[in-house]
Length: 267
Image 1 (cartoon, rainbow, N blue to C red):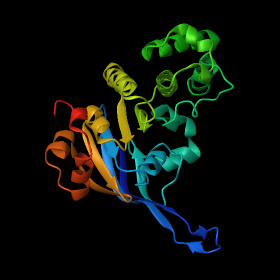
Image 2 (cartoon, one colour):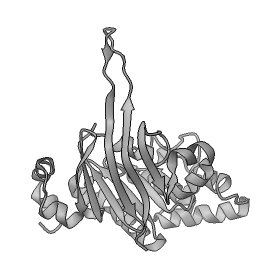
Image 3 (cartoon, rainbow, N blue to C red):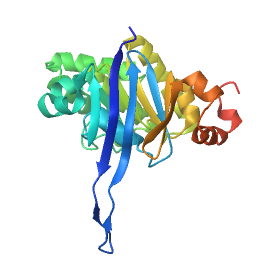
Image 4 (cartoon, rainbow, N blue to C red):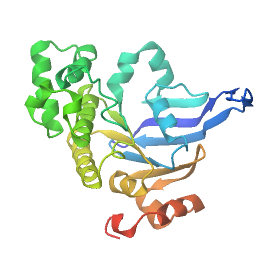
């Protein structure tokens, strides 16, 4: 199936005016400015741009953590903001998020078991025996040993912690995962391992991804379609091969020129 799973239509997010340290009013900021895009079921949409371009704000609107100021965000034709207000459990069963900093996104006071059991209990209604079995399965899915379940987040490397973050997202059995800079804090060799894991999980579990990054080389590795954001707008959108072989926008060309040739796949 190639039907659109998630779409945004003319989405705007404005942060209102506020007083600066000198007591002056700052003008409202359009962090996201009229973005329309979609991701088909089973595909990966890469969203790329420099820090501050609005891509993380867009990600948070996609999962219902922020409401849009204007426009629509829909998953399977249903309004994400409405689901966030009225049926958050339904929304969490459909879409989950993996965050940039794996250690700060995991509760340091809880074991991995408790972290993974929370969605199993709250969203899937599993009993203790089912949860115990599923925790072991989830760790296996992300290539971690079952005995890791009784350790705390600080006992893991960054790459292992991100695998736990991915396992937590998988626990809800979502159709869509939004990944916000999921490998930017990891060493390049560990990045490659996590990207391979994500690709494998997508094939095995029929997942759909929105993958957000400032790194075009990473986006090229994992994405089917690519959206390039600049100052809150999508300035270029198209299939991966087209974006990287024949970029149409000057900003896209600028980003591509900054990638060392050794980091491009086969280039």
